[in-house]
Length: 121
Image (cartoon, rainbow, N blue to C red; front, side, top):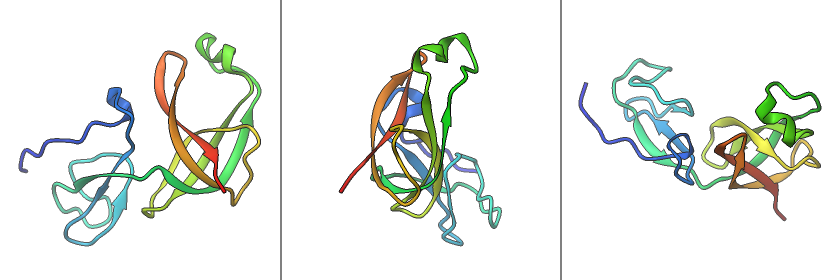
C-alpha cells in the first residue's frame, strides 16, 4: 500500500467533507478506508465534496444522548444523497423534508465542528 496524503476534513477540524473514489472500479465511499469496499483495490483516492445534495431521510432527536448534546435538543439527523453520488449522515435544519435540496456549512455541536445542512432553492 502506498502512502498517500489524506485531505483534511471535518473529522480533523477542517471545514470540508471528504469522500473516496476507487481508481479501479469507480465506486464511491464516504467512510475512509485503505481499500475499496466494493472491489478491494488498495488506496482509493480522497476527493473533496461540494457540500450539495438532497435529503434522503430525516429524524428529529428530542432526547439528549449525552450531557454534551442536551443544549442542542431538539436537533435533526439527516441522510443526504450528495451531488457526487455518495450518501452521508449529518445534522441539518429542523424543518428539512425528504427531497429538499441542501448545502452544507460547518457548525459547532457538543464541542466539535460538524457538517450542518441547510435548505437551498
